[in-house]
Length: 390
Image 1 (cartoon, helix red, strand yellow):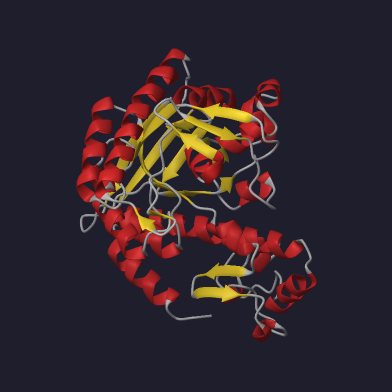
Image 2 (cartoon, rainbow, N blue to C red):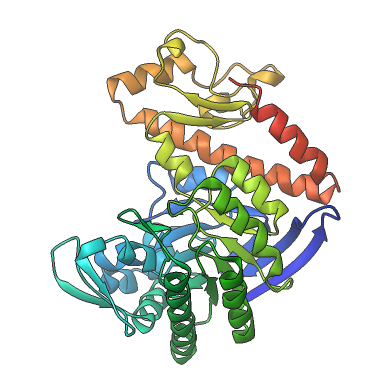
């Protein structure tokens, strides 16, 4: 089941406010979706995700197929029961992970033959297999199997002809995914994925064909795969608002806080990215006033929290009152610097909580600005704040 309601639109951009109803709950859009590759958002309790306002999270079809396997997942109530998450889940198709195996895989019209990175077993992923796995996972949003068109391979930039061939195969796989999804009587929602590399006319050809297939929702794939930022922004500006207005739009694997704010202006409703948690594990923290590298020596004795305006547990403690409003809870930059220097596991845990809270709070502020008809002014304030520095 999927219902999408358009609640408002910024008159000066393609930004829009919406409500997405899925089998496991309601999602207010625009929204950021934390990534839980192996059935967990690394280092973050499900309770913490709920407290910070996560409405929908991701799971990874390929990795969950490898471990723990479908028998375990089926016996334990699908992915929701397995990881004890009662809100919506989106699963990717496994296509990106198979593509990233490089020489360990062979892509054909039928699907992808590859060696398991876990035990070396010879395996096969096809549109039909992907739909079968995701039906067992019982994810609220299912992604078609597509071929992720790379920006370049071993220094060779993908040509227009190569991007076209890849995009056309993804369209054929979209039809096969749709046919198998319906054969399985999957009660959830299947999204088609727009491909076409860095070529706007190929993107248009892909989205026109997918729109004719009448998917419940659509994603923009093949961005943030090594291309220059200007090319990514160019495709982001071209594609989302041309997709059907009454369907949700998902930009896959993007990105920085700036990418999210600009993506919303381009008409995107759903975002995901590993950046908040991956960067957290490397001591890279996002704040309202720019990015902070907690391992730097200048934080050794700093009593301030990561972000004095932040209400997360790491910055504001149990009371949730930020320093900017007189609170003095939370952990100091000096303490987090110490944990990082000692290799303590609490460091990436607190950093992940902060970064995810920052992303989710940013999207909450985006929705509030759209609801108030204030999005252009919000974008200007956001850019000014992020440029101030920490």
